[in-house]
Image (cartoon, rainbow over all chains, first blue to last red):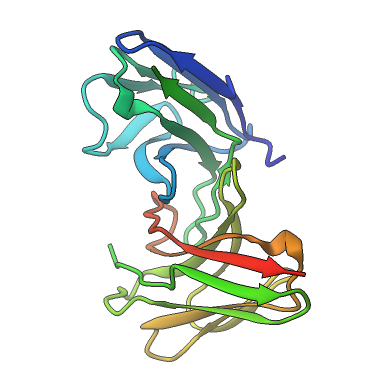
Length: 115
Length: 109
């Protein structure tokens, strides 16, 4: 257990439905990242926050995806009008900002299956 | 961001030392070399990070030659529980992580 929790751990939905995932980072961490991982591939960066500010979004993050971190604590990732291609493991990670050190603590992930 | 190349898979037996080499020919001056480990159905876990020469912790050693164009992760006396995917990344400090496909290590009894 890294101290980063994600909810739910598994989500099955039908194509076209909206889904929302939650991530609770380690409390003193000011950076929070979202990644997506498909079978046999490494995680792909989606977006990250420093405190409540969303600093970067990947081109992978289409307009159907939105992420928030309203009070600089937990974060949510919402996918609207889900597609089968959205099926993946969604990983959240948190870290502090420490020059020269890039250890990120990952949660267990939310596995999304779109039918 | 520097691209990394590492073997797709490696096999070993329990008790052996495993060395996984990663090449990163276009590493930048401010890049750090970082390794993560991932077990099935879990998020990646940080193993070790270095900038140059040798770094050792309780889990692994990281060897980086003077030109920094490659690095070698060394796992001493592996056990079955070391079976996992190992990712080599080069990152300029605290930033998003760009993962490749990693090296799938299989340890046999």
